[in-house]
Image 1 (cartoon, one colour):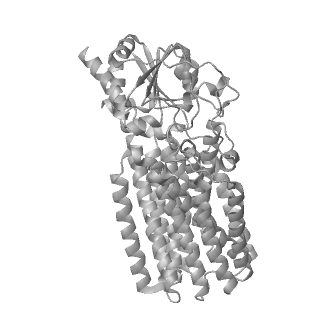
Image 2: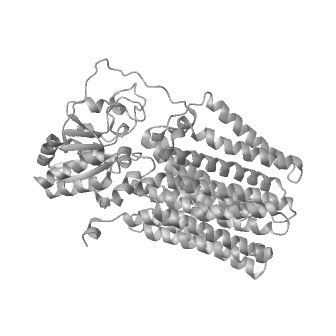
Length: 101
Length: 472
């Protein structure tokens, strides 16, 4: 990897970190669990890395393919399970008026 | 750069924007569900984008077959799991999913290493690539085994029931961290040779052990902090997994998760008046000897008498804690809340940020029982009104209502912000039995003159109260 790419990736990393801090810092405490579970599902983005890793091993390295495949499996559980569970939790948060309808 | 590469990058941008907007919407009660949907669409787009990328296309038919099969299997397992879980089992499920994310990132890094060994040019041999690859293994592995231990503790597995004390745990953890970092340095020196292989193995094993030793000494009450922290780690691991293959969507979204996890961790620490460092590095002190020699007995009250007092109350505040979750009393509590309101009484809930075992745990349980979220107040909102409250009902909470945090400097929890339940005119404490709870700290609230104890299973006690109201 050349220096320019490295600096660019670090730049992206730092900006994303600050963006994350700004986004999250004022979340009401009642939403902490859904927020955690929702961001947890996002951390399953590693599925993208897993798919790429599995594919680049295809021609040369069987162990790499297997590990990549297992990584895809667990990342998918993290993603799908995480989103559905978050949705289930959020669907329970109701306002008073909604309840009476 | 050919067309397909550019197209993939555009899709990654769209996905990243959807994640950012999704997280923003997730932070407001009205839009949270939409936010979650947006971020899931972002995830779908990111997956489609990598599936059409040149790397995966070059992998050929078998690559697609394996990938699709793994995705289908994972989707089915994840979907069923998410639908079947009880709401009371939510903390351990979140912990487990989090561990899977960490495991996946760790495996991605090892698989990237395999690709390098196999002669693929997708992974470089420069120091930066090697460093980030090693760090992905380290962070992912700690998130994995750490979450597994947290899961075991939250699920109440027998082997984790006792608080485990590791003698000299700081030295142990520092030593293991040193070994793991040493492994990364080995790998950086010689990525393609035998030293590199040894480095990868050393880092993997040491990091897996580190996750265990780091979390195993942490007690149940500190779980909200450690879960938030592990969440941050799994995000960070995903971000680092993006560096070796120069994948920006991994870096952006992983980093967003990392940042949110760190903030939640800090919020939780503040709510407990602990520094994060003290939580990780300090050994839990044995029970502090009670400062006052005078020992009062708590007064017990029968359910019938409690009903008579409740019937006359005009305002009631319910303070739930982990005990409510254990007794699964949230639905009974909602019924009690309804009959009290019918009786012309104002009912609110005062929820401490660290009540329960994960951030916002009580809110989720009460929402499940259909308590409208306007009724769920934070301790900061409720405390100023507390002296005007007729009855505070403490259900399975202990440390978060312990006045020693305010007036006893020798108490281990001195300085921790609490729900000022003791200021209410009368305090009911629903408790399974006598004893000091998980933290082993004496609670002077129980022996206050205006406090009465109602012993027994919280769900039964609350249900009996509801019956009394209905028979009235």
